Amino acid sequence: MSGAYSALQLVRNALTGHRGWPKAWRSPQPRPAYDVVIIGGGGHGLATAYYLARNHGVRNVAVLEKGWIGGGNTGRNTTIVRSDYYYPESAAFFDRSVTLYEGLSQDLNFNVMFSQRGMLTIGHSRGEMDFRRKLVNGMRLNGIDLEMVDEAQARAMCPLLNPSPSARYPILGGMVQRRAGTVRHDAVVWGYARAADRLGVDIIQNCAVTGVRRDPVSGAVTGVETTRGLIGAGKVGLAVAGHSSVVAAMAGFRLPLRSYALQAFVSEPLKPVLDMVVSSSVLNIYVSQSDKGGLVLGGNLDPYASYAQRGNPPTMEAVLSGLIEMIPAFSRVRLLRQWAGIVDYAHDSSPVLGLSPVANFFLNCGWGGGGFKAIPAGGETFAHTVATGQPHPLIKAFSLDRFRDQALVDEAAAAGIEH
Image (spheres, rainbow, N blue to C red):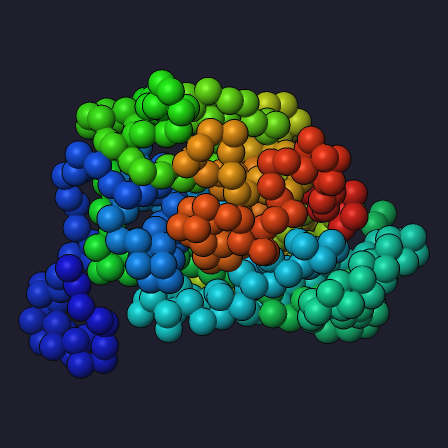
């Protein structure tokens, strides 16, 4: 296992051609049984394992990943972190995640490259500006750092915005969250993996779960069947994003989720031209510039359920046309590549967290397109839930029971967002 990174360690390894660095985490063989098995080696699975070990002293933990860690949605997203949610339950949860991201590099002893460059959401009509003003007032009452800006302020923040006064979608102003920003997605995975490994967690890659074992009398989970054999488990945590319904079916119950492809795009590298995240709900587009210079952009999910991790021309056309309408100067920029992640949506566009109908089987799913920004708080609260058997106070509103009790947290309707 690796020790703490430091300036002295960097100097020492620089003198030896950087050939002496230890492995960031182990590649152990799976043990016959663990106290806790986390299915899914993305950000949420690794964060849960880390907080289980650090906050609750539960270190006999295995994280099972069917491919390589971070090879799913954590490595297929647009890396935006924000907390502009309308309902108090959502606002408190996502703001906790932003707060954890702010100290994550220090906590993990690994630079996750959190750049709090701010996020500007454009308004294109008087009606939309009135709606944004309502959102800002509500979110500020919930403690979120959001503010309205007029057209002049918006253009000062992003001079590239469409300058035409006769544009089809004119720029009238918008709302901005200055604590929002972007994070290096791979660094989040590597940081949590390395920190969890140092606390004794086993990270087992290339280990797909093929079944869930349950006690024939009590019905409680007893282990999981994998491509590397049977692994016993006192508790099992589900953190597999778009394939949550598939694994839940293995455990014998259904989830109120549907899986869709959510596409993202990146352009050729450019010199620095965009120093914040800019989005438009009307144009269904958001864009930022990465440290490598590429424009990272995305839009709505595909309109049909799918498990296909690939792009398609209609979505590409919709996203790129929205980008060019918002910032015409980008019309001559060449697209470099596109990809898709599989996201699972609940009916109210809020996550499903907490207990399941099966004893000792716990749920972390339904994130839609908002899972990456929720990784730290999701891991922290899910670890509490798994360790204690009781939902963390921050996630009580997101239990599976809310569908039975008709207590939905409908952020799509309230905040005008899908995730």
